[in-house]
Length: 312
Ligand SMILES: Nc1nc2c(c(=O)[nH]1)N[C@H]1C(S)=C(S)[C@@H](COP(=O)(O)O)O[C@H]1N2
Ligand SMILES: [Mo]
Image (cartoon, rainbow, N blue to C red; front, top):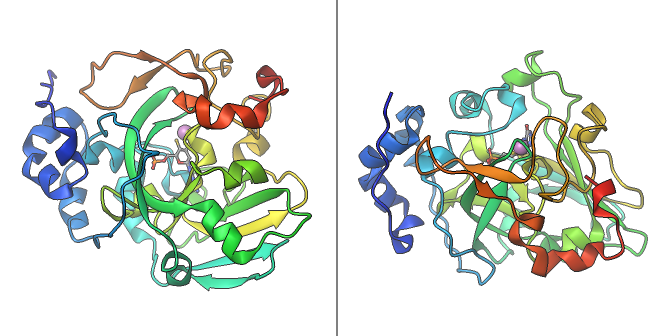
């Protein structure tokens, strides 16, 4: 099958989904294999209001259909198209996040109570999966530091641990289809959690997150491989010890805790020297991967003195 590239899209238009919908015939050509069915339903998603951010990249975002149609979310299956097909089964309203551990104000928080006081911003970030593909995603969310400051981190709090929900009735991957040790878990060191680049996203493309992207609240850490950016969070714990993380538990010879994007350290199955942008048609050229996914200026200082080759 020959797939024609779409016309270039002006970056001024790109974060408006209406502009996207007007062009979806063209974009459908680009997305190629990705079904359009899910998109029309998502047109009903609630719009968010947010400010722009100086921390956004000026690179052109990956088309909406790809951002919401080519996903990793093993709770719904292994395939890249499984999340878009099956994640609608997840009930995201109401949603509660348990915040516990070394914080002044632990509790079970309704999602609204976490999001309402927050300063929502659009953060257009590069996003790099350890499988060596990449996108540019216009997230909407707020800094994790903002939430941590609100709940008050106590002096012994050195790490932040996150968990996704376990709900096999709604998550087919948890019914024996994907054999991970549920719940999906991730963690950050406190300085990483407090870094201004680290956000909790509740939206993408100006609207509430679709389920396949980790609704209603997911982490985004743009200088680390995508698996750190845990989806559909139900628990945030401040801990004194380095928490477990799912992919390291699964295969510690392949995945680490830090998982900083590093073109010089290969994964046993994927060279990390370059990446395949999942936009611009199936024949898009690979491009060189950047240290810390291009965010070295903002984050390299946190790892001064660490031998980065040992912390894959
Ligand atoms: N709970 C949960 N979070 C997850 C995953 C997952 O399988 N389960 N996959 C991770 C991986 S490997 C990637 S690359 C990103 C993909 O995010 P996206 O689908 O929004 O692009 O989500 C991450 N967060
Ligand atoms: Mo990934």
